[in-house]
Length: 201
Ligand code: GLN
Image (tube, protein in one colour):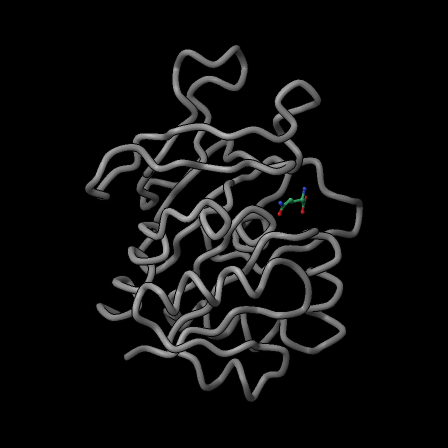
């Protein structure tokens, strides 16, 4: 049984732990470098990416985490977590940094006022059982990806421009990222997919 950490500096840690445990993993909260060193995979939860970025540096987790990502640690970033994983962020604060590793550019708070927060049923590549029910909360989208990034989900084409077709879930090797929050929808398939990535790595 893999041990999966959930970064527990800010955000909806409890919901991710519950979803991961329901998907066959043991979980631990990660706040210190020694806790990070003991996990087989890590979830970066949603929250506020600028705050989590600052706390990562205050807790001296930024460099150990970048080193483990470079070393192939499976990481799943949801919403703010996706921003933290991306190599580049648009719409960030002037001093906002990311951990990086995911060859992508994300746009923070991308959806704007009309669809600030919304739910959608999204076709999701490689997952059986039909569309994934996705909850977006002041979510980012992905503006562009590198050649080695597999696009897993996009906003459906019947949404208004410029939202239609935007990339909202990707995988690059053992890195997984979604703009939305599967931990609060009751649909466990994204967490099950990540647990499988951890087991295979
Ligand atoms: N808007 C937040 C940010 O920029 C992300 C929101 C979320 O994680 N639900 O960090």
